[in-house]
Image (tube, rainbow, N blue to C red; front, side):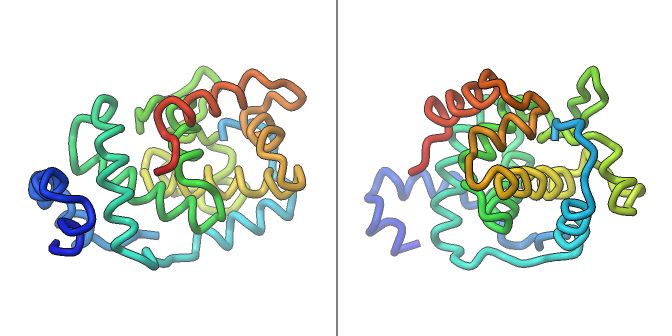
Length: 203
C-alpha cells in the first residue's frame, strides 16, 4: 500500500481504500481454467483445445492491480456490481495476455459485441461477452462447457482472435473483420477501434 501511495499520492490512496474489498476478492480467488460463424479448421481446433487446458496466473500483481483499478473505474457505468466487474477485468487481463493480445483491445471488442452483458445472445445464437457461437464447443470436444461463464467465454474469444491475427499475418484490422464474419469490410474494425480510443485507451 505504501508503494502505491508514494507512486500515486494522497488522492489515489483514498481511491485504494475504497477498492480494498474488491482487491481482496481479486487476490483471494484463483484463476479457473467469436462472433464469427466460420467453422474452425484443424489448426484452430488444436489451438483451442490447448488453450482450454492451460492455466496460469498474473506475473506482476502490482501492475495488474493498477490496471484493474483503472479499468474498473471505466467499466462501472456498464457493470454496476464490483465483484462481477473485477471478475470480468481479471479474466480479460489474463486471457488477453495469455493469447498475446492487448487487453484494452479485448475490452473494446467486448463493448462492441455485447456491451458487457455476460448473458447476451445474438440473433444468430452467439453467446456471452465475446459472442461465441455454440458450435465451437462441439468442435473441440467440450459440449458441456458454459459460454456464459466469463472465463470460458473469454478464453474462447481471445484464442479465436489470436488465431485470426496469425492467419492475417499480424493485421489486426483484417483479424477483427474475420472475427466478426465481415471479411473484406471495415465497419466492424472501425467500431472496435473507436471504442478503444474513446474508452479503453491504454494507460
